[in-house]
Image (cartoon, rainbow over all chains, first blue to last red; front, side, top):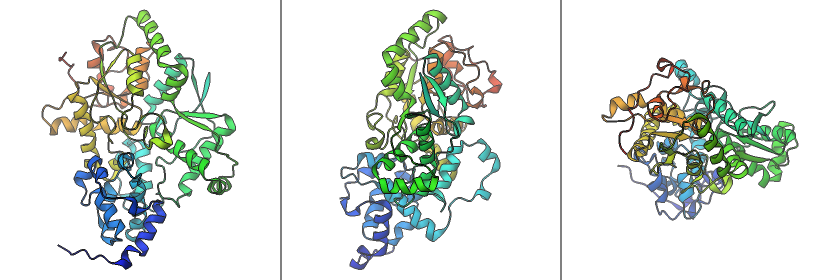
Length: 138
Length: 318
């Protein structure tokens, strides 16, 4: 298990600044009550729970960009509806997706989709998927 | 009364039964849905990154076009509703960014359009009491009614959240669908997952996770002994409906649950001709549960024309 190293430089660093700018959120408004994780319908399969995603983001830990959590968040807005401090976690998740897509490239490639499946799917699933999982979207 | 109407992409294809039944119901109630001219895709997701103005160009162009044609626009699709209303809210609150987007889409939209979901029109303009009256009249004329049918009112996410911007109903404890179902003579059932996510577009990248999320919703509705479930979203309809054959194989004892658009159920309650309401796109055949209410013959499709999903046996519990 890797040690997590915290430092003042990271907390005041570029990643934190970028997440806050893209999400429009003050990460330190979160006091880790965990209501977001309690209500998240995808939490069971996340390697970092939603409140942990924010915790990593607060500390500027790059590891958060490798978490599957940002890709299994469906932006359902349940966490935001229940956050006692009004932190818009779906926007934080989106900021992390945008940064991760920049670094890691697209998560969804048209040529890899089964044409038969695409013909069957509702368009808004396909359009929504490309908006969330490629650089063109967000 | 003619209401400017934005159908969105999916309501012309996978969700065409929603569009057809919605238009028929509106017309029968004297609220004609008049399709906007020259509309484009809303983008299917509201952009959540603060610098992503480009993703708002599409929905902003829809709003600008609708404003040139009237003072409001109504949708049936819950996702289009969410995207258009949130974009409108953003444009109203940020004049500088509104001008940048206006410049890009070559429009002069001032943010002064009202975005409504058709459910709001029914509640606030027609009124559920008046709807109940129309349902009673249809019952007298046809001899059929949905009395006693147990229906799970499924809201999902984007019809309600974020509440601050959408203001359709309480995001945690809504009742607009329950009120509508009561006006139709049905019995709405309470169930734990009525505002939970169905899995949404994760269907494209994490199909198993989306299926698990949908399964949770269906299980929850089944525990409340629902005969069928209604939704206001074409993506929820698909997610909840299309994998039920597989769910039945994976989970012994799983009872398939028909997933209808609320407008389809309304149309049946109003005694309308339901022949052409996209039933062939439904996987789970709703006829077994509707036959006992006298609606078994009104669909105009043969069993083989349904999407081939599992068939539900009528609920024997009281």
